[in-house]
Image (spheres, rainbow, N blue to C red):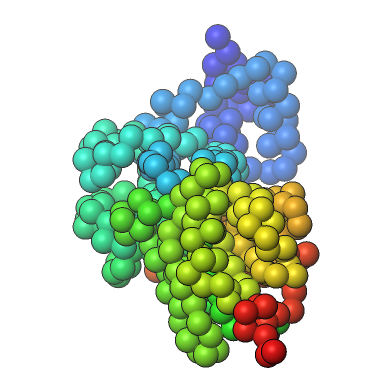
Length: 342
């Protein structure tokens, strides 16, 4: 097994110089640094992670609390997780993934073990039971999402209220007057998940501002459940010409249900979604959408956590502005047959 002393002898430097090159704690000339790195590569030396952690009092690991619960669209969730993992590696940190929905108990367990340097928390509820513990946690934390009271916390997310508003503003500009929101599955609202409530509030507030008629309801993810939801909407609101969908798993089923129910997209009903670009682009027709910036949110969360680890000041709240891209699923609002003048 190659040791740090072997590297020092090979490079013709002191052991302390090799240590400084690895840790970055002291400036070393570029020539010496390159010689040491070349010896490390040649000999196949791997610094002992445990020794490094003891020396720096760092585990070089962060925890990602990622409860896998019903109503969560796994592909989008994994986009967030992948962004956290890849960004953490750029800071020479690994990620401990916690998937059990243990609430405060899970946070308390990892905090007591000294296994991690900090915590990134996802799937944040409006009155999240983990929040009081996070405020008292000795290790730094960042939340992807905002609770109802975010004081004393560091949070980052898409501005879902503005995202909902952006969808309605777009439909209003096209002349639509009667719209609906098909939101997340009912269980997501029942858990008081922040992003779902904020999107609904944004849609309702913008519709009120434009003098539009708007209804909002949860939507399940299965094809038959989506078809029933769309059919029920059209039966109760035959004048509806605009639809906002905030449910990635249901988007394709909505687009399939509308023609089957006699409504073409966008001629009869315009559809705008809040979803990742790849979901919008592969839909038929391609969806006008507000991007869910999973990769950017994940990168920002890790960057904020690393700044907290080094004692840098960070903002309490970071809200990313929504970006709406117009595609083929939205068009001018039309007066439904039953409301056209005779």
